[in-house]
Amino acid sequence: MAQKQKFPHLLGSKWTSTQKTWGWRHFQVINRKNQDKWVFAEMTASCDDNVRFWINAKQLKDRDLWLPGWKTLEDIKEME
Image (cartoon, rainbow, N blue to C red; front, side, top):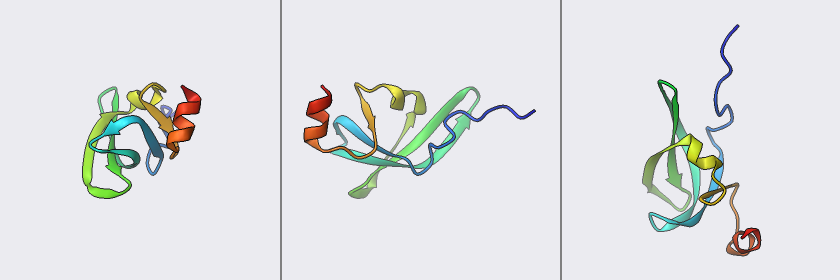
């Protein structure tokens, strides 16, 4: 039996950073990389394709740092 894939819906997912990251808050996962037991996501800013970085996908589960989907500032304040 094949091993269950970690973060199966990662590619194409949209995220909101609770703090400005590289000057932006809204990001989309454009690539994923499995490296041993780790899964990494390549993020790009939704408003600037030149802003790209890799992040450990486990960090996306931390709701103090990342929220699923694209949220408004009002949504972020309500969740705090």
